[in-house]
Image (cartoon, rainbow, N blue to C red; front, side, top):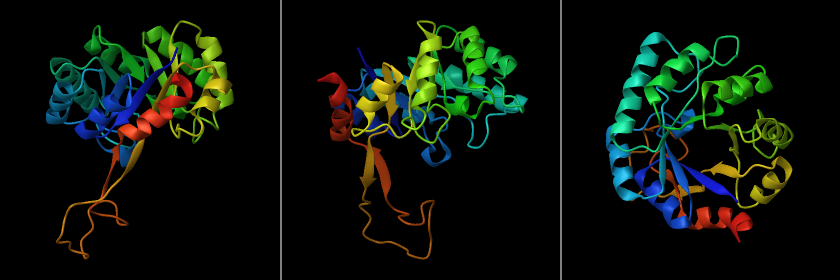
Length: 244
């Protein structure tokens, strides 16, 4: 009855997602920015490493979802590369400056996507009128919407998620994401009625570096050498309340 998508920030996270029992990954870089387009090499290696579904985020930068013509052209090129490298689906979303779905920009990207199914990502949560946005996204032909119900976490947004699931019917999939974990996934499913879920199941990974320069930070100032990575154990633990 349920499907599970992992927000994977590396090839190692993709492999862990598969080992933990996930149905699909959303491959992305730039996690601190909310996810950006992964590299050619990451997509290619991920495709060679897993058999489950591989969706690739198409997002040229962090920040807002109001894109210039140059950025749209960049996204079109990235869509072509993702398809060439064997992506099963794409993840993107565009808004106007008023907070509406940018149907013109989305139509351009949807045409470039061709037959690949498209998930409209959490740009949805920044839309001015989510119920209108739902209808616009359905009209565009997207396969699903990734959303926290316009709240900081999916559990907090469960009321709107339930409305979206009801109004969507069988026209589009509503996929809760953000803050979904082993402790709340069953409650989110009960409250929202959703059947697909998006989560990262990541844990900190200690760096293997022996020499470290304490005067130079790269990104995370609290732990400039460490990273975070999806683990198979956390994927399995998060899935368990709904699958078994």
